[in-house]
Length: 313
Ligand code: UDP
Ligand code: MG
Image (cartoon, rainbow, N blue to C red):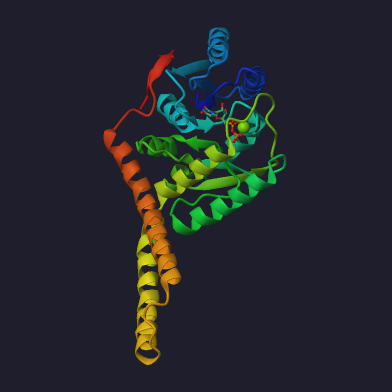
């Protein structure tokens, strides 16, 4: 019998978990031809999430849990799930029902046809999201697709079903700074995009503030593109051009008109401008160096405090 692993990252999800667990069990029962392995990853929750997961694990042999020693973030939680999951097919979904488990049978059918290695989901609309957030999200997808080879689809969710080949490829990418939306695209394989209507979280609150999302977007760009690094060179070229023109103009003015002392204000403006651009470029470089520094430490992505599973990868 083929096995399906479902990875569910959970951070303070005590309100949503009762709904989610009921729904995923209902779906699992609908697909008796498959053996289910449901892996909840408790990402250092501060509420009753772990207690709930442990009680689920006791009551149903299909349910398992991995519990982190603290909050390591959703990326780490997904990576842990991928490494512990043993299924022939592996799916990731959120605990808040924004990734409807009811789509699973359709996704399974598409992947079983053998034409695709993964079925990914994409939100058709962004209803229920603050407009400013949607605006920046759209801009982010435009930019990252232009300047990287990550191939990230606008509205793409982390919710997807993959076959073993693709999961193994993802597990083999052990980078510390993980940006899964980019990783899924980077490993390649044939992906079917399944659109669906945005669903609002069933209970509890989103863990993402605007600032956290902004940082996430920046990380995504830095992790999958070297283009920001070349911004410094471009500024250099442009500045050199401008200064060459000004040099000629000012020398000509001095020779033909005189008055060499004029221009203190413009001089200060130029100094501040160039100083600002230099600091900006240094900052970009600093971001890359910081990533390299974290990468070179080879710290684990997460620390497991307790689990009922054995790592697979
Ligand atoms: N999550 C996690 N660790 C975190 C933040 C979030 O495991 O540090 C989980 C969370 O429990 C949920 C999923 O990631 O299952 C998506 O989080 P959320 O619903 O808050 O994000 P949104 O849907 O608003 O983008
Ligand atoms: Mg959500």
